[in-house]
Length: 332
Ligand SMILES: Cc1cc2nc3c(=O)[nH]c(=O)nc-3n(C[C@H](O)[C@H](O)[C@H](O)COP(=O)(O)O)c2cc1C
Image (tube, rainbow, N blue to C red; front, side):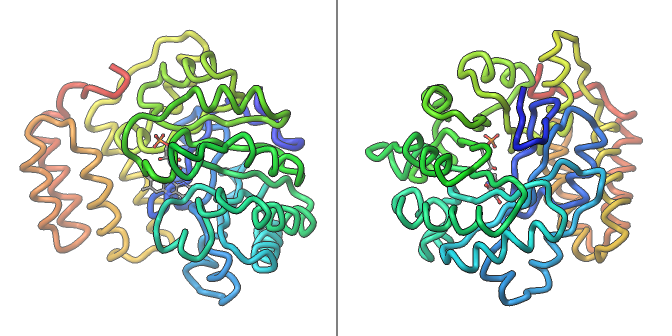
């Protein structure tokens, strides 16, 4: 059972924030597929919000059917962070999440993201300011530590808990390891034992059964899934079925493509064809990676100069392959 403040997250399966991917249309499609108890926005810069950057302001927007939703913010300046949190609350977020795990150099150089794992007094100050500025729950997303020699997820989470955080998500890797190597779920188990607030475990849930295994092995209250969603958008729904001991089915290539068409239909309401072409090129590489003959299809997709060309290329491919056999999912 995962409860954040007064919000119960059911099922306790969470879509990870992924910059450049989990925008509002993507989140809506994932919610429609089922099994997704909670979503986060991509990380949003408190500095860019302060400067009223139009694209950043756009990132605060979401649809009612995405709830419950956390708006994730990052930054190093306590006042700007407090103001950004207030803005997230005014935008209607169910809670505000503080990014303490982003490993990107551009972000850590400013003292934000994972850099705050190394400066607990600064972190405490930011969290206290954010907590005071809003009435909605505040959560934090952390990594296990800066590097293998400085694992401090428990200390960081305790600082967050003392500052009034309502939950903490742990991506069980260090900043130094980026996305390499294997996530070490023992850090999630250690954290779960050390703090009173709910812990959401994250890192390398690749198959639907992994979610159940993470809950059982670590005792965490929720499971967050990121990259696996890209190649298998059904994984949250399948994980939910696996949690209930039910069998689940793998999607066919056509069903996979229909998910992207659904994304397109939603996104077309307010996105340009140019934006959609770029986004679909990115997505369709994920979508195609397990299809027989997919390198030819990927070539066609990448050469498409217009959205319609891309859609036709995929439709022709699917027609020729008769919709294709059910593809192998990460859950197989
Ligand atoms: C392309 C990409 C973008 C990401 N953007 C964010 C982000 O905006 N905020 C954040 O907290 N984590 C971000 N992450 C990290 C994920 O939320 C998650 O912690 C990580 O991918 C590990 O989970 P997984 O093994 O299930 O993918 C990103 C990861 C990827 C691959």
